[in-house]
Length: 421
Image (cartoon, rainbow, N blue to C red; front, side, top):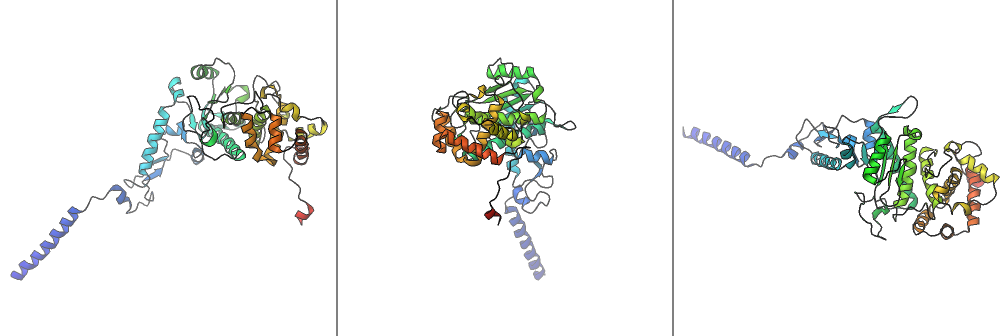
């Protein structure tokens, strides 16, 4: 009997120790429970939101915020939802933080508040874009929804900024997160070179265009509006020339270049002072490079001829330079952007094309000197180390070996016999 009691006492003691130990163990957190393993989300605690197509998800990577994505109820613009098989994971906190960031950004958008309805807009590294057009026709048979249109435009203008950054040797850092609204400090250059984000708007209705112009820009202008230099802004509506997605994409690409150049290093547009050739040439160059043609005008009021060889200029330039032996550069470099007709702008495009191909390192010092309103003849001589006559001679020679006599594809440089061996 004594042995039996001792045996029972031993087992009771073991049970008491076990339960006491369990009671003293700290509670396992949700994050620790996930470590046990969630096969569905790989311990992330989140799952991709199923409301977004793969195409749009890819396009969303190119923007910082998107109002149409932010309107998604399941994910709140984070593109993630909670995993329904676990409580928490390594990305759960990030998802909640992102929802708050998106909601705060969306709440501060003044255009939607003024119009009393959601306005489709995105913010990218360099731009604040509104594409309030509804679906746009891409071709005779295809119509593109507003969300995709918005992102196509955003992709184009950021490509302009990227290419320009490569040509000018920019650090790659973006401008400040908020558009500059106060006075800038003269001589103080911001990180990345830009003082503000470029604001670009396109509306389906001319009345809306004029209303926001009056409310936000204190302008009663009836046509397209473009303000360059400090806090650049561009506003247009889907009029006859800009009704399709390709037309609007080219228009925004072209004007994005004007705006970026005007705000870089110093808040100054030099198209009406000493650098019309650079201003017009660059705007057409980036439009041409991205869309393989250029159909936009630099200044609406100054452009009578709206079409020049259907926007494909290589053959036309090649033939014109071969036909006219007189110098062009002395006349071009003293003209304002608004004084040039399209044939002259095409020559400026070709000259910029030559610089990009042969002396891209000269573009930054050229631009900085133009911001100081240095005469273009002096700038070209100092940056290229040649007289104006020598520069024109080399540009013309390059056109002969690069531009075709038919079609629009640049000719490939011929390899020497030694290189072919």
